[in-house]
Image (cartoon, rainbow, N blue to C red; front, top):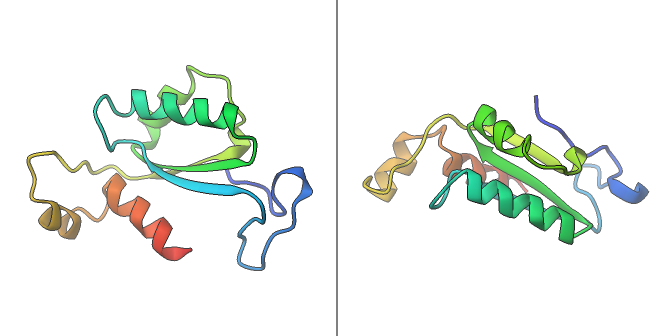
Length: 117
């Protein structure tokens, strides 16, 4: 189950009818996109949350593994949402073919979130 920012956002900021929050930076992060992922990516996300007060993160990737990494830190869980994506695109895969065939990859799920907004 994903944590979602309450309607109206943090600090009682008003929300648009479509659920977007005014004044909050929403960032989508492919938690499995990079070297030493998801450990390094999650650590960076938690650091960003502590330094940027109006940041709301949507992490894509294997939910269980992301939650396992997040459990190592103290952070405001109301500012983090996880979108489960069990597939992984390996560095050795052809990029276009991988995006077309791995619809449940963390990269594709992240792109879908961006495209929907």
